[in-house]
Structures are given as C-alpha cells and as structure tokens.
Image 1 (tube, rainbow, N blue to C red):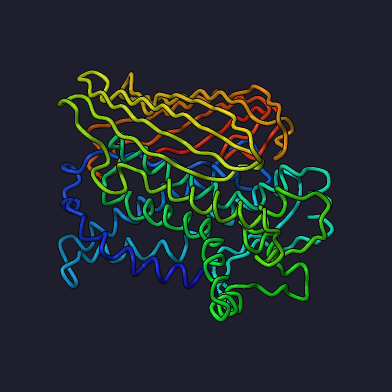
Image 2: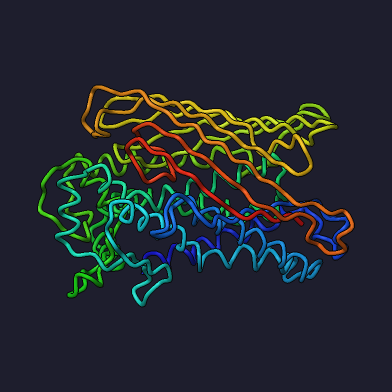
Length: 444
C-alpha cells in the first residue's frame, strides 16, 4: 500500500510543475523537428537476462518516444489550462517506473547466479516484488558476499538515480527537449527521496504514539506464508541499514523500523534521510536545463545522492557544451564523488565526452572513472584501495537525406567497458570486469 500512496501523492505534487512547461509541441512536419537519437541495447555482456544498465537504457529510450508521441498527438489541446500531453506524460510513469527499479534488484541476484522473478507491477498490497528466492539462498548470499547482499537492497534506488542522471545529462547537452525529459526526471528524484525519507516519517511518528501505530499498520508488510512469493527486499532502506551495521543477525525478509537499533535508526534518519534532499540541488529541476554563457557555450550542474554497498555517496556533476560548426556540439562531463562508509570518506572522480560527431555517420562517447573505496567494500573498513574504469561507445549510422520519412538514421552501436575491482553504478560486478555491448540506434 505504501508505494500506491506515494505514487498518488506524487501525482498531486507534480501537477503544479506542469505549468512550467513552455515548449512548443512538436510539429507534424518532421523536417522541422530536431533530429533525436534513441538507443536500444540488445546485448550487454551476458545472455542470462537484462543487466541494470541495459534495462535502464531501453526504458529511457522508450519513455522518450512515448512522451514525444503524446506531444505530437495532442499538440495544443489543454485541460484545466494545462496541456493534455503534460497530464499524460506526468502521470503514466507512476504506473510503470517500478520496471527499472525492480529490475535493478533482480540484476544483482542474476549476477550472483541466483534466479528470481521480477513482478514490477503493483499487487493488491500496493507493492512491486522480485520473488522466487528462498530465505536460505539470501542467508547464504549475506554470509558469503555481504557487499552484493547489501546492494540487492540498494540497487533499485541506484537504478532510479542513474536514470535521473541520464535524463539530466541529455537535457544539459540538448540531446532531447525539456518537456520530453522532465516528467520522468522529476518523478525519479521524488521517488528517491520518498524511499530514503521513509525513516524520517517513522521517526516523526514515534513522537506521537497513535500516529506511529497508524503508520506501522498502514505501511508495514506482512511476510507471505510461501517464501517463494515474498519480495526479496521488503523495505529497501530498512533492510540495507540492518545489513550494513550487523553480521549474522537473525534473518528476516521484511525488516521493520522496530527491528533497528538506535544507531541504525539514527543512520536511517539523520544521514540517509536528510542527505536525500541533496537530490533537489539541480539546475534542471527548478530552472532551465542549462545556462548559456555565450552563444556557443553553455553549462549545467547538479548534486546527487544515492546508496552504495558499503554506505552512500554524494555526487557533484558539471556539464559543458561547446557548439561548433563542423562537429555539432562538444559535450564534456565532469563529476566528483564523495563516498562514505561508517565514518570514513573515499573520493572518486570522472570525466567524459558525450555524443561527439566527427563524421555524419559516427557518434562517439567515452568516460573515465577513478575511485578510492573501502577494502572489501566493507562498511567498517578504515583502509582503501584504488581503482577505476574506462568505457567507450561508437554509434555507426546509415544516412540517406532522400528518405521521405521521419526515420532519418539507423545504425548499430558497440561499447567496451573495462573496470578494476570496485563498485560502479549500474554495473553489477564488484571484481575486475570486461564487458562488450551491442545495440540498435535510430534517429528521427
């Protein structure tokens, strides 16, 4: 029931934001519409199932296409002085966003050769599940690979965060329009805070006995009799907090707020809960997606917060866009990350060039990441190790200016990722890893 209530409240909250949409709907004349590219991943290093990044990429492309189609179909039609297309595009994600969230959870188990079933649509209790896993399987994962066990809880929020970050980047580099990207971006950021602030709700309700009893009665989940029908996580943040602080504790599938110690509750409320508000420090969230410094140079930036298998992290992101006559735009991306386990901080940095077009038939993106992370990705570790990753993507297109259809380009993409040991968002493996990916690209 909790997820349904959150979704309903968020729909009510989102409606005022629709009034800020000032873009002209797309024209039915395709020649007047800016060329946009949509990426679909068909292979991402494994044939076992979708990876987290693969599902995120495919959902991201599909959501952009849906929003674009809705804008074209309903054009200037309004309802209560708000565009009909905005009513639709701000509402439909509330019913399907859990697809990527639950696949994030599921992908961690798949990477550990644990089979599970994603049920990304709300059941009668208002919850979306990943199920089909026994208690003993989860206990074995906790006792042998604690980092992956914790990430099983945090991966849904991780996926939401990376989805919103991808939308933010597309907006900063003008790779798609504000009205197309903003609904899912705003909803994801709201849901991240909704998850991470659950502890604050319980903490506040504790001060009022009757309210606390009502909250727990409304939001607490009851474990199904059939363990294969149970969700693997229950409350994501409660389970992650318990697993971070304790080893070999009495296993319970649906960890409740009352199961946490005072120190664990303080972490959940004062650290995880209040840090989640950092996700609202985004230029894209409140104003334009970027600031024009000159006619050919624009900047954008944001702060973000999410969870890691050893604690949490804070990102500072900067986006620089240089318009050129020969190669379109030069899009540069920089970030600084501060990760923390129990008491220690660990820095990370990254930079990249996004969608560089040296030729009309080629787009290139490349990113480099370096990090220091706690030994064994352990919550209590005071020592660190150094690592990093490099990834490059090439998108190759067939182009025909004589095509008299909206489809102007079609092609294939290939990607290569090389990483050392360590945690990297959207990549399930914590050891050294090499991944080759293949995708389909369309432009219209």
